[in-house]
Length: 555
Image (cartoon, helix red, strand yellow):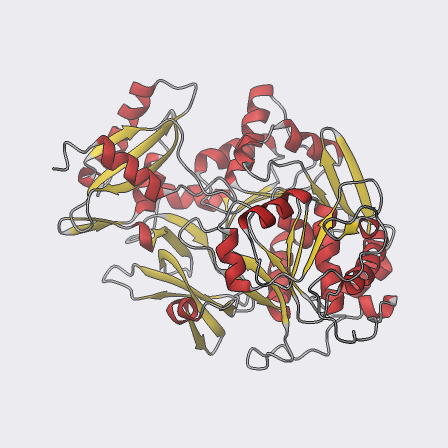
């Protein structure tokens, strides 16, 4: 067995009756204990083996069910196969071209897309369908076109050669910890590929980040440092893949019915209800999901008395949202903005008190948003820095994905080897201050290049977002590169006066050292955002919109 984290065996063996997962939907919930999760993984591994899944196979898993996703990922690990996670809204066809999967496991809707759009047509030899039913997943994992729930059998096209003997699925096999593995990056055979997770594609073509077992172990260790989990903790996963980590982190994991295709359109009650019913102590979610929760609590004068930690990830946490969250939790609770990416998660964290202090009185020469200090074992550098210390944030350490799958050109552009392991260029602009804290200035690709100057996005946006009546802002460049007109797009709060909010933004710009460079302030009803977290702004689309609005001025 090759589950990634030392001590995993002890967690399950010592506490088999403890809750592992709680799946919530429309006011109801289904609970799975740790022992049941082990048994489900056993049953699934047997069924997958019967269907033709073999060690080394890459298996795309597309399901919205937290239990199915987790049990399938663990079962694939038992067999030595590699789970592949792809956003259903991303460029799935191109992702599958990169990964060339042998296996495709998904809900009927995912298989409809596979057939109609030809996803993985030349590679997938083992297609399997998960069918929603109250029975165990192992009893409803079927081959497309199969009429009953009997054994999956070997689908047409699978390797007809003599199969290897069935895997040893006894509890010691499933639960044995991987201390015997060599986790040195230069020894890939001793540190096999554990998972491929595709980026969201919000800043370009999605890429498959490879996680070795040491990568997952490093990520779990870093998250444990952040969470400092207690036996009585209950974790709410506002992003489905977090369900994979719940049993490894320790706390019972509650997965609310967040809309997987549009998180920002989730009903707030679907988040609040599970928190109150299951006495959640730790919330992990994106700013979009946390904004729904905080807004609902403010409107209805509700509080979250059991919550002791909120971790925001996926986009910078603004002080306005931090204030709203702070008002809903006990005074001693911790509100953290966590920085990282699919290729390196987590990197650093900054609590809301430090975030406000840094915004109010930034150190001399610093600007943007404070990301806090890198976590233990994580090493941050600033590459290609200018005279002010502004450059590209690069990260090395145990949480860093060592490579992209089948994308050597992307590896060449972003990866290098250092004394601390693989160094990954994040594409983010930032600085390191004298206290060793990281500061974020925006994406390198989003620099606004005017005539004789460049503007990073984050410094101006973080200031403008504090204006009364403003939900958020986005700085984009209108017109051709090198002579762009800086335009600040403004999303006004629904309850605010648009003229007053825009006037407040202009007042902030008048006080900002670079505010005079902004050539236009444009109101926008709702910014286009990334599909995964609904928190990162799609600046290319927004810049196109601004360019069309200002076409007369740009001639």
